[in-house]
Amino acid sequence: MNNLNEIYVGVKGKEYTLTRIDNLCQKYRGRYGDVRILFKNYCYDTIAVFEECFDTSLLGITRCINKVKRYQSLDNCDYNKAILDIVDMLIKLKGIVNSMVPIKDLPSCRELTKLSAEDIVSKGKDLVKSDIIKTSIAVLSLGSKVGKIIHIEDVKRYYMNSIDELQNELQLKGKTISSTEQFLLDKFKAEIGYCNLAMIKAGIGMIDEVEELAEIAKKDIEKFENQCLGGYPSMHMIAK
Image: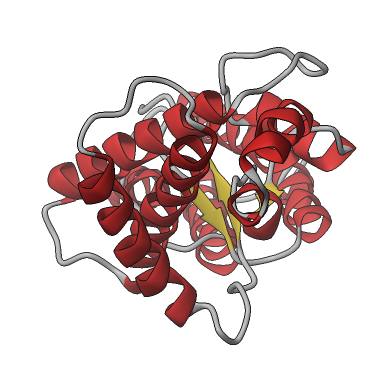
């Protein structure tokens, strides 16, 4: 089974999804009857939870669904081993769900671009002071521990890695990009744009071709912000 290292997007609230997974893990415990029928029903219920609680256009959850479907299609297998495999997957997904961060709460340098160069240097060190952002930093593996100062470069690096991961998933999936995947791709590019504009404004680092970089940033930001005039979609993003 895959190690659940891909990007996951939840379409239900965290507590609701955790409850659905917990109930699923317990639902067939101690039941008696035709083992084959019970197992197929378990597979059916598992797929239903996946489809209800996650955006199924992304590679990670698609792989989870396809694995359960393969088990479901078998007329004869080691059902105990298969159930343990599915439960192991559910436990890992539960860990991912526990780490869910609303997209609107992901770290961003957007507000820094509105400050003076002096304030950017000062405020940039306070980029992740709130508890929510500290949590998201820990979850999103920005390379720093909770409570440690996070710099603009850390945020930029996270979104660059996110783009690489998403593009890799798109290549592996080999299908037309979904609206969710396009949204995430535009989001990641816009966030890199905010980072670049903040770095340019504050004179952080040796940045070549500043004008071209700033122009790309502005185009990516404009494209994304035009999508979000009505607010962010009600989803949560999970990264490896």
